Image 1 (cartoon, rainbow, N blue to C red):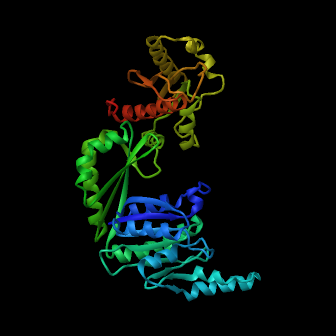
Image 2: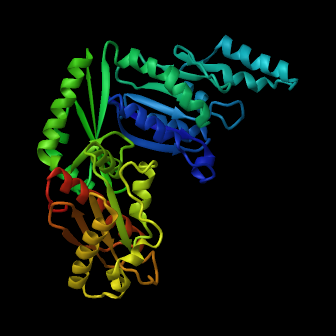
Image 3: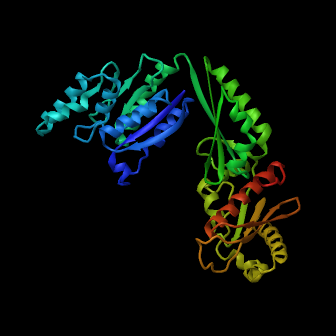
Length: 420
């Protein structure tokens, strides 16, 4: 099933308001397995709205219009859609009563055009608005060659609760009756989104149920698998099968599940579950590694903070920032990571060693070498050399992410992989 999302409002075209609604709606319908091929913004103009609807009707099964349901002259969405469909506008008596009572109770005179907020597409279904006054509309066209229509209010604080509480049941009843739809989010690190999608191209091209979608969250590619079936066991089996096929190709880069699960959380969970403690030394990263691990380890269950002045006790540290030769830096990184682990008492110590000199322009793309050292009690200390070539802040972040990935791979025994 294909949907098209059209946001309505001249203020959106002028950049006066950021349109978060299309993102919200697209994510919600994607979770149901509804694909979105086109999105657009149209100003408050009846003729251009009609043109947009005519075009969308040729390529979508469901057209979702957002905004333009209010009482003012430039709120034209309902009128344009009704005109396009050749239907009238009906009044939702409960919604109208809500508008009338509010004006009576507040003492504000009610203008005639306020009644427009209680109108919906004739022959369709009104959608209750618990927060505001403008009702939504859901119109199913009996002609299967034409699209169905969903009209939603523009204010996000009205649209989002309306969608979650009322629109979802309409969609389920109309398109997914007796169907269970479940999504599973897989997270990866160490492979780019373009490379990931290329490897999975055959699976994506031939997908039916489950469907597969790739997207990127900063440096972490993500895959969403969505399956539908008549019972949860069937759906879970489809998701398991889809995940197995995907990870047979890219499983070496997989680290966890969930929309909001991060690489540093995965490392924290891994070390906590194995009863391992961690300390870190950083040079040239503005302590970014420490900040990230501390955000997920607020009670210091695994991360050992080095006490103030600790590094002064490590003699080799005094000359670290004066080392320029990369081979020498490797030696220093190895020595310092190992020595710090022993002095701190941690099971694992890492050293993220970049450039400690002043960077002339942090926004300029530049090559920056980093040495990433991993020291663990009972095994040989290893150092990985990396060169990053984005801007300074991006290079720092990539080095820190790589350090987290090195910890994960070393602890789980995955070993180092070719980066893609």
